[in-house]
Length: 131
Image 1: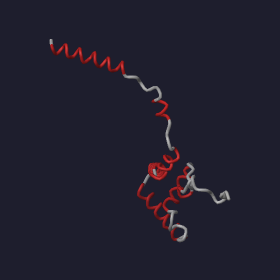
Image 2: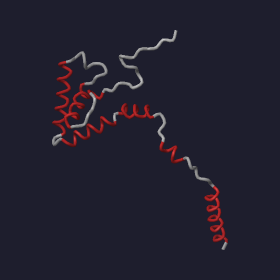
Image 3: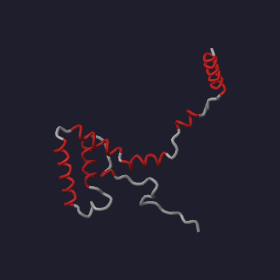
Image 4: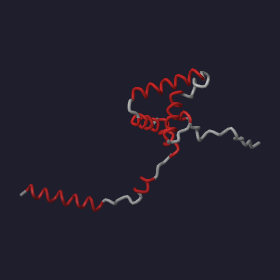
């Protein structure tokens, strides 16, 4: 008898708590907004998710994955041997080969997955001096 009364009491308390708490009406609007969108886009590009998806897509389209990887490595080595000065710093030959292959499949990728920083001024930027 005491257990039944305790169960009924807990049920009524749960109902009262649920009725007394007010739902936040602005929660869905806050969940839709993504703050600092530019930084998140940059993080996605830096993490290499797009590159990883492209590699998986290329590997799935090939019959023999090992030959495909060897072909890409040989082509990247040929790029490095032909342009030693160009492929030493930021530009990577393997990324150049992969971007060319993905472009051949039909998906546009920038050359060697290189994208300019949207927050850096371009070559035609003139700094205004307030003197």
